[in-house]
Image (tube, rainbow, N blue to C red):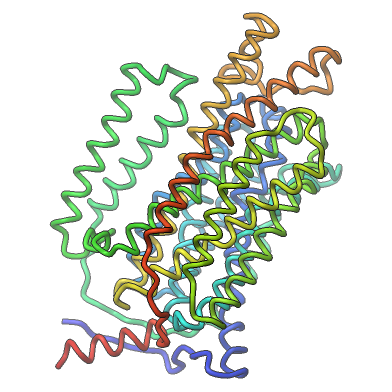
Length: 525
């Protein structure tokens, strides 16, 4: 029934300095690919006010330029992960990077916001492949006992790409001979380099199976998630939260997902095996991953707007102001990974990350239009440190606790739920922000100004407005942004509770491929 064919070179086990060097060489293309795909999600953050002004978009469009990419990434991650258990991982990664290049070129040359949003969807499909497959490949090559060292590096790459994107975007926007279009085009040459590096350095056994991909399940999961994300992004702006539109979209999304669960329970090769959720570690790590996604994506996207509108900073300065979060993520992710590899213990880092992330959200809920740069830097560093300790180590805990043949789907499932948390966070919080801004504008400037920055009007260009109006607008955006972080406090508290109930288990000393070989040998006997 099942036949296998392997390329001559098997995955290197990191037993010594030489093999460790080979592993790093093999992961180099993955790191470049992951960096540019994550960068795509965040590089537009500081460029968005300029993009929206040039293309004449609204606050709703502002949110959707981010959400469309996250939505496409979220919806396709489970399918990429499932295919990784069935087909060549190397070919799949190169395909995902190729899609990313196409989407980036369309985005960089877009004439209007409609085509820009479509291009972001294509980018998101490619980024979904990289997000899911990079960790799958790592788990195939490296034992969990050693994975902390490399996961820390990848966590740092992920964190730097997530939070450094706004800085790069700001610099591009403020450079007269480049402009915001290069926020999309800059990733193209790096993505092509990643494809070449992967071709030359990544060598994994290719397992060929007689398979049946559950396309109906994939379609229903995608449709259900997209419906809920559309509802969460439009409710409160296009229609009331308590309305027939909400009932139709939210109810429809839930019904479709319930149907997807039924289809998945009957499928021979389900996209998301429901049996995985019987595993306590996987179930709790999934819940925590959703909430980490809300904190990570929601925080960075709307802080950029706060810097530029509420504090009146340029895109470049706004990017520089995000550096404390970059360093927090970079240091905590890398150090935690090294210490986990050294000590073989990981639960304490998850709990500490949950506590610190909760503190960061609470501190950021106190910001206003007069908060000092020093205090902001401290608050953002705290949030970054917490997210850095949680993000990759949740994946490590789950990978360590599942059979090798489920590594791909488990890894992609956690990436899926983290991305879904980010997409829901950006879309729902964006809708709350737009509604709050509209309400406050109406209170302070009267009904005619109520749409400014809200659902129907463009984001205000404070450089063209009189000083008294600018002060009011800045106060409105500061208040609305702080409210978003206040909403995030109970969500991060739930993440901490989920982490507390995860049971620590010793880290496996075999790589995914070695574990899979043993499982097959045991099954044959």
